[in-house]
Image 1 (cartoon, rainbow, N blue to C red):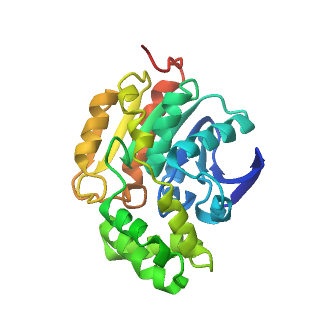
Image 2 (cartoon, rainbow, N blue to C red):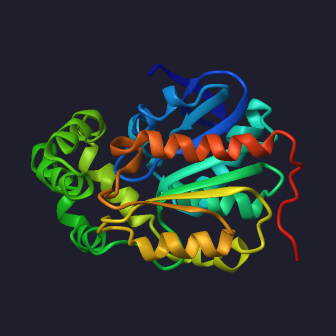
Length: 280
């Protein structure tokens, strides 16, 4: 997965791109990066897939210093990124925080959103989760830790969020390097400090007024984002919900085919369907 870079409004933004066709924009969460989608992208034939890196995350974590990196602001950054590439309409797919970014962008810029796919995403009042709140409370301590001391904390998140220890270990190998540098602990604290439940609550009532094809994919055994929230998304978006009974939080890594199938299902209807956005 080769990373591309471009300057958008004075911010150097990163993304991974594969394929050609209708644009699909995939947004990761915490503590991951575009690599989260590495098993999904090859399954999306006939689409131009752009796995965007949130500002202040992954290889871009230095851009989070002295900058608003809240979920709501990430939606603004993503809109500017798409505008800079000349992408006027795309299917938005989001996991975890990235799902919140996709919801906010769909509400704020409905003309950009041709379709919506959410998988174990934040929304409503589902976040921050207790373990993240605990890290926030200990932020002053965490930011001073050597990276080696942070590693076990992130390892626990991946173990709890994956179905097998092997999958958790592979995820750590993928995502830990972004936190392994001297600034890694401080970068994580910046990310956590920027989390505000008000960002998704502000658009919660607008979701049921979105007129776009949507699909929900949910690991029903997720202890971070409960399946009840997936059911609520399905009701508000009038979208089918695909439950994965054994699935935990990191569905794009553990169940890439289920996620890809949901995106493909949306792609099948967006080509001939005009974007109607939000209705009154």
